[in-house]
Length: 91
Image (tube, rainbow, N blue to C red; front, side, top):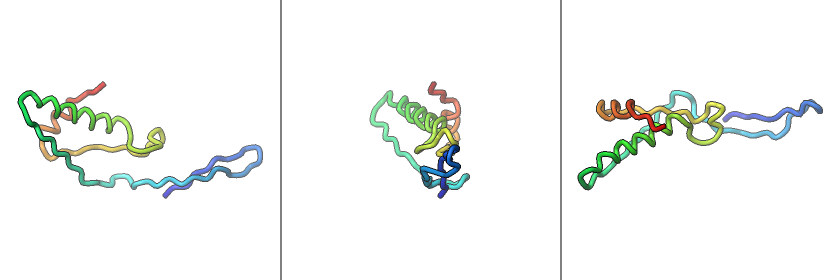
């Protein structure tokens, strides 16, 4: 939990207190995705999913991303998926 407030520079007092709940840096979460390919030609869905995950890495989860909160990185067990993810440039 982190507390922040604004300072009224004329009165010299604190105002608008707010509390932000944060997850400590380097915290790891288990995350898995199952993608069922039902037909031929659906391999592009994997690239679409990886582009979405890459966009999450480039942005942030939750609020206050401009302050550095919510930064994430993905790790992959499969080396081939990792290679495709690293090559993914969605913009």
